[in-house]
Length: 561
Image (cartoon, rainbow, N blue to C red; front, side):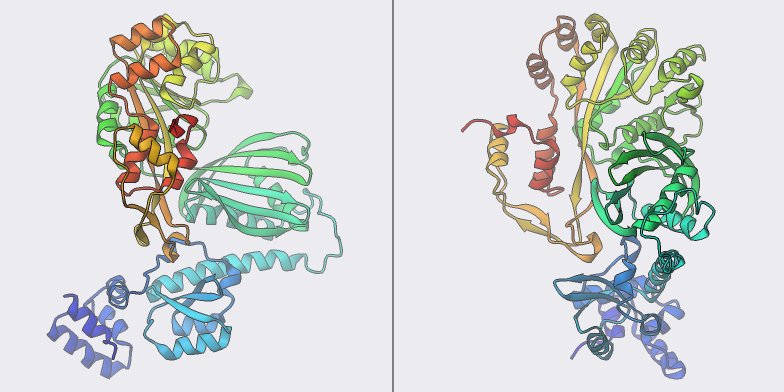
């Protein structure tokens, strides 16, 4: 016989005999459920009751705030039942309907749901409040989408409507806002609106990977595109060439900036919006997941008063976020910190931030020249894109300023080669660069479905041995659960190689030696490569071998037998 909720909470030390007796007495008087009574009497929180139930019954506890809930899935169960029975369908897996329930012990409700849906029901635990909030949020999404579709249901046109025709139409505005609001809720970094023959696909990039969200009918995509183009200051009549724009607005209670680009395709314009969370709290360097060794090296170079610090990596590797964390560490009343950015992604109190505007002649280079006349102590240049910007940044570091910037390169030593190829003099680089951070982001294993696994990839095994390490007998992976959307991953962490310049390395740079020799010197100086850092994360059970191969695999990792 299953234990009652009161007994479960008692067993877990959350409820005393006296408190349970008082709650049971109150329950008899009101006729309410015991869980509701306990929460109303402030004896436990709804979340504590749900956590206790989940742990005791070995049923997954789901965080509905972290999940995208498809309106089509939610509609499987009538809204009246969702509200009255405190249940919410969230996903279908192999024909099994996963339902969030406030009371997963209610067999009658589960039987009713099975008869109603014709599917096997798998319960997961959530509180009544969480279910109600998630349902309301999803219903709003569904209603807005249905509103827009029904607006044109009887339209006999088969062709896509003129993008200008419905610019002021409220449903089109609502749907565009809806897409962006949901992206913020899901902590997406990018929103992709991709036209195809029959409509438009909406995808979010979450934790570095794209996920399908919804389909927009062909005759409606023009309204959504036009709304976003207007918000971004783009020309809605121009569909033949790419455009760039920016949006700044408050959505879902957050101040958010967006960098919007349009690209003509054979089926119409593709639009991508990169979300820049202006109100986000800046992470401390310790929160990034950097190894203690790498963190110490970063702090070492940040103590210096002059020189050039570069953060490198591909697009989406967290370069800008790391730069902001550096600025956050350096920020103090005694320093004049000035940035030149495109765009300004985070706002920092006490920092003078300049937005690049090429239309009025404010480029990185012109902005940087002016900044030098503003008596700066620390200068941050968003990106070194050309020889002119690189030259000014390097000479700024040479004349007593601490300069921070980013560059697109694959490794720390490759950064030196890239700067030389831009036209910068080796002897100047050797005198100015004090540190280079090359980084990537790897997905971390979901803590709620983490399970042991075996390392079978021969490339990784061979590479680990080349590092004079013993390949682990046990690694970890995510099995997949409702909390991580069955991906097995939740969140990302940084892997990095940090190159701190010493005398030997400066002499080598000045002598124009090749990348292979520079790497040897860097390794002798104590640098841990990206691949080695990733392996350490694998051994520690932070990420998987698949993630390592996806993010940092190189031919060199294969090695020789």
